[in-house]
Image 1 (cartoon, rainbow, N blue to C red):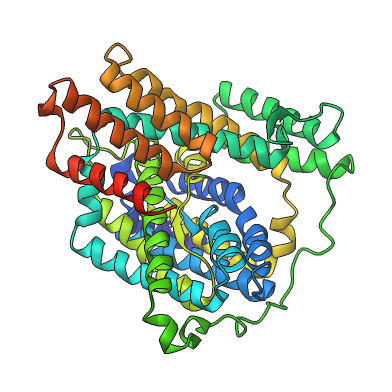
Image 2 (image 1 turned 45 degrees about the horizontal axis):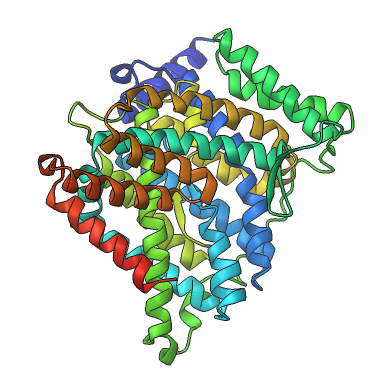
Length: 447
C-alpha cells in the first residue's frame, strides 16, 4: 500500500516538474480528463481522413496509421515545447483540398501531393524559426483576434451541427435536419445533456455527455455497437511510407509543384493562425499585449507534424479547434496534449472502439464549445464601424465559407482599408499593410 502511494507521489512529482501544474493552478486528474475530452471530440479524423484520402487512391489502412502517428508526434512536440493544451492532427479542409482538388480535380498523383505537403512543412519550419509566422499573429489587431475567436466558435458549432445531422445542405439550401430522424433526435438529446451538465458546473461535463450520448445511441440501436474493441492487427504503413519521394525529378522542379506548394502553404498558414488565436484566447494563453507567449513553439509543432505526416503518408497537420473542448474542461498545460498523444497511439489498437463513438455525441459537445467561444463577441466595439464591419466579416465568413483563412483575409483587408480611408492610420501597422497587399494579390492571381 505504502509502496503504491510512493510510486503515485513520484509520478505526480515528475508530471509537476515537466508541466508546471501547480503554477497553472491545475492537477493531473483535470488535465487527463481534458485530454480525453479533446481526443473524443477529434477521434473522428481517424476514420474520416483515411476514407477521404483513399478516394485519391491511397491505401486506407496506411493512411489510418499515418494519421494516428502524425497526430501523436505533433501533439507530443506541442506538449513539451510549448506546454500548451493544444492537440494537432491532419486538418479537415486541408485533406479535402489534397484529395478532391489537387488529385481528383487538378489531376496530380497523390505522391506529388504528399511531396507538396512535405515541402510546405519544411518551409513552415524555416518561417517559424525566423519568427515570420509569429510576426503575422502579432500584427493582427485585438478586435480581429476577438472576431477570430468568435468566428472559430461559430465554425466549431457549425461543424458539430453538420456532422451530427442537425443541419443539412440540400439543393444548395441550408436547412434544419428532420426531427423524425432518430440520429437528429440523438443529437438533440446529447445537446440537452451537455447543456445541463455545463450549466450545473459538473467536472468533465463534455466528456460525460459524449459517453452518455454514445451509450444512449447504442442501447437504443440508433448507432451500431462496436463489433470489436481491441486488435493487434495494425494496418501496414508501407503503401504510403516515404512515397512522397517517389515523384519524378521533372515534376519536382515544375510550375505545377510551385502552385501546389503555395496553395497548401497559404491555406495552412492562416488556418493555423486562426485556430491558434481562437484556442489561445479560450485558454487565456494571450498576454496583456495581445500576444501568444509561446506562439513560435506552438507553430513549430504543427510544422514538424506536417513534415513527419507527409513522410508517413497523410495530408497537412494543423492545430485542432476541438482542443477548445479540453480547455473548457479545465485543461491548461501540455499534460492535456500529452494525454491526447498517448490516446492517438493507443487508437492503433483500439480503433474499432473509438470509431464507434457517433458524430451525434461529439457534435453536441462541439456546439456547446462554440457557445463558450462566442463570449468574445462582447469584447468587440460595434459602435465603431471601422472595427465592427471587419470583425463581422471575419466571424460570419468562417462558418459560411467553411474556411477560417477566408474569414481572416476579409477581416484584415477590410480593417486596413477602412482605417486608412477614415484617417485612422495610427491603428494600422506596416505588417498589416503588407498582409493586405498579399491577400489582394492572392485573389487577383489565384482562382
